[in-house]
Image 1 (cartoon, rainbow, N blue to C red):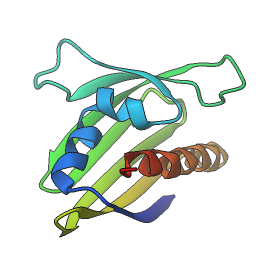
Image 2: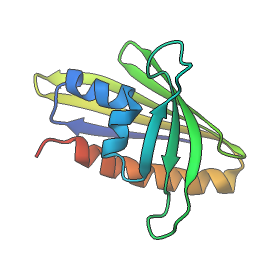
Image 3: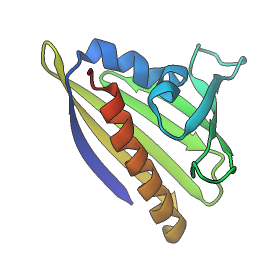
Image 4: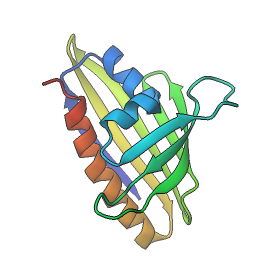
Length: 138
């Protein structure tokens, strides 16, 4: 299951990249993430994070999982582990359009049990729309 969404953000890529590569900053914009903590044994700072998320704001249920962040040129990759039956990967491709405008291509790939993947895909996409609106300057 693969989904691609293109966003135009009215910020320079140099401003967006630190938000997407440091999940402690990313969590400040994400509507479902309560806390993002880097693992102290990281070989590089900020590479592996423990995420605590509340997927349904009206229910006191929290989910914990791990995200490994990798950067290859203008592509930021999140490899997510710890979600039973599913293997999600998120990629952000940043392309500078103008001095203060960046195209962010969001690519979500989920492998695993199809019904669970569809539910997770819906939650992630809804959260992405909110996150990208929050990253936009006022």
